Length: 290
Ligand SMILES: [Zn+2]
Image 1 (cartoon, rainbow, N blue to C red):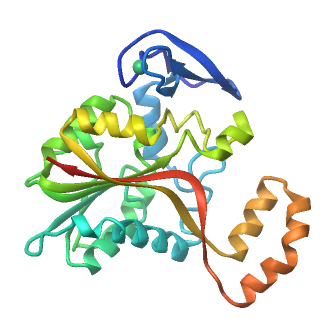
Image 2: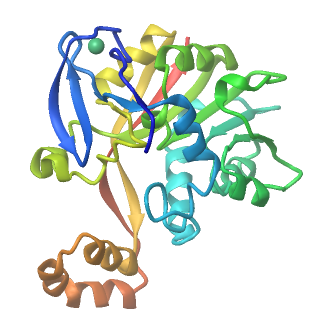
């Protein structure tokens, strides 16, 4: 049995909230005061840590079934997300990047290719054993527990901020480890996504054991601004897919009629080796440290 705890609103600390969705045995609530959406009660911090330390990326109950599947598509996502922030990544000499929750390190490879001195944070033991490349500095403890020997010019959290407890403490930490005019890049599920409105508690981003915060551009901006950041860009974020990926997902979510309907189109996409950048119910934001 998983240990859970009741919490107050992660944004404004109010203890008044209303039930929005039930997902399996979990409750997703909205704060009565600031409208932030979060899971309550949620797993305790210890339980969450256990989740991320062991086989989070090779798991059928939560996390990823096999993270390394579609690695080329994942690399393309990271590459686009980093490129889309490059207008603000202006430092030339001695620039440093930190990716939080770097998994197999695909994002680290991209930072290195464009000339960054690269660091990553990862808790999963299996991933850590793969991240042995001596050219990267890898931290194996959570964000708040590491001593960083210097500040960073770019910090990224790709599909990570929705997993974090103690949001104010974390954003204060980001503010202290990012240089003035440095960049914070965040990709996270978008609570205002059309798919959430259409699918309700069946929205694929509702994973309440691990996704404990549900942001909008506005709530994420409010949190970042409170800690000394300015938003310079926000987009609906997509992800690259190919024909096999679409086919797998349609099967997984039991959409046989759609699969049948699009079968000729999928064959063509496969034949031409096309990658599509499809909406992924997520937001992409770039913040600059003031
Ligand atoms: Zn609140």
